[in-house]
Length: 305
Image (cartoon, rainbow, N blue to C red; front, side, top):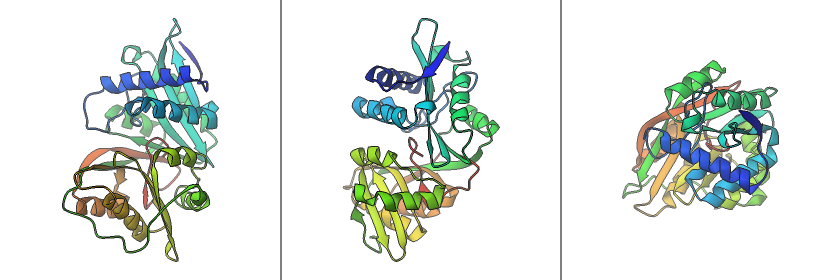
C-alpha cells in the first residue's frame, strides 16, 4: 500500500469523491446523514457525509479547497496496482484541528488502510491545542476517536418537513450576509472554538445562504444550504443563536425539508427552535472534542467543523 499526499487535480478529487461514495453506499442504513470514514484497522467509520453525496462538481471543489488550504492534511491511499482505496482530509485553523473526511473502500477494509490514513491526519494536527470531529453514530468510530484522546459528546439531529408549526419570529434583525462579514464571523469563531474558519468562508459563501445578526447584544451568523440544512451556526449568546436559527427555518417554505445536525446537549436552544418548527429529534452520533469545551451556542459543520 502506498499513502501519498492528495494533489490539487480533478483526477485526485474525483477519485476521492468516488471512493467516499462507495464507502457510504456500503454502510448500513442509519438515516439520511449517515456518512463514511475509515478507521484504524479497516472498517467504514463515519466522519461526515461523503463529498460524493452532493453535486459532483461541488464535491470536487470541496475536496480541492482542502487540498489547497491544508496540503499536509489531505492523503490518498492506493493498492499495489495504483488504484485509490482510501482517503483522508483534515484541516488546521488557528490552532484548531478538524477531521473532515476519512473513507476506505469496502474491499480494502481490514488491511490497515484506515489506520495509516488516520495516523497521518493526527500527525498533521499534532501541534494543535484543540481538536474536533463530527461523527455519526458508529460504535467503531466512537471507540477509535475516544482512544485517540477525544471526548465523546452524544449528539442528535433535528429533521423533517416544515409544517404549519412555526418558531416564534426573531426578536431582532437578521440580515443577508456577505464576504464583508468575514471579520465578524472570524471573531465569533475565535470566541467559541478558539480558531476562525478563515478561508473556509470563501467556499461556504459560494454554496450557502448566509444570515447575520449583529447588534449591541452581540453577533452571530448562520449558513443555510439550499436543501434546508443548517451547515454552520455560531453566536455569542443563546438569544442571538435562537434568533438566527428561527430566521433560517422561517425562510423555508411550508413542506420543505430541513435538517440541523450535530446538536449536543449544550444546544437546548436549538432543540427548542427545531421542535417549534415541527422537526423531529433523532439520536445521531457524537461531536468529538479534544483540548476544548463544547462550543456553545454552536452548530458545527461536519465538513468544516
